[in-house]
Image 1 (cartoon, helix red, strand yellow):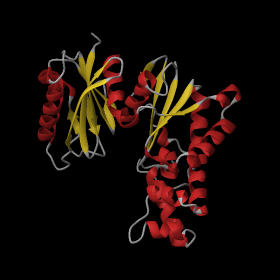
Image 2 (spheres, rainbow, N blue to C red):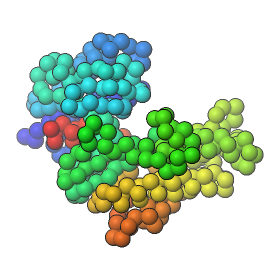
Image 3 (cartoon, one colour):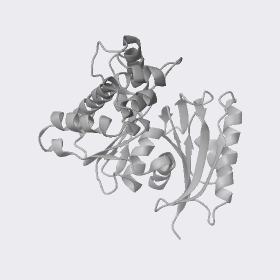
Image 4 (cartoon, rainbow, N blue to C red):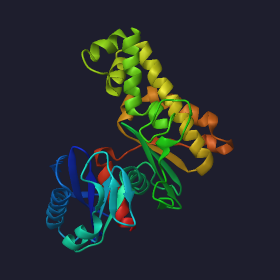
Length: 313
């Protein structure tokens, strides 16, 4: 029988886990609500119970487990240094106590890096040797696969493409720098763009959608779908900016392909067409033909990314 692994995908709303086969089939899945105010001990116990529940529902024992978590991850030390989604994940050792509880090896990985390996193993990057993956959501993250293996860098920070600086005089970023790709064209930045459009009076449809509350990237996308020219222009401009950032990275890494995932893909070709064009215009020589593909993993991207890390371990 094919090997199976336990995969965990831990976000701010839900803790999700699944039993996944080495061919990428999700055999068992379960999720519980996240509790942001829980203590580290309570979070650890909740995770252990979730993973044990999944393990015990499988037809055969899993060979390993891996957890995908947003934030700064010490993969070698098996701990979360800090996570924006779960306050208890601060310098919290996870892998050792969970391995003792489950009786199998447990690893941990940044969620965007795990997504890169998941796309490489099971998704839009399947068949590539070198892959650049970008997650386009509230922020912008990424991961790198080099020679078929996840590349983490010296301190585990490789793939933080959202913090490539495009404009040193640009808007402040949560990382402390200014003009990062994420600060200019992440989901939060799109929300700020939308709010400025409303305040300028240039987007009456958008103003109606976001009445009495701050505008979001989703509002901007909805206004564009309704034909608002100013909203369409903002999305296209953001896509162009992301393409410039990706093109610069493609020139350094020369991957076989670039894969994309995340909520901003809901903006469709309004975002993707200028993204692809900008990337191709900036990429050097034959790198200009590097394909850009959208994720094929859907809602299971986090789980399959974690499974890929466990299988590669």
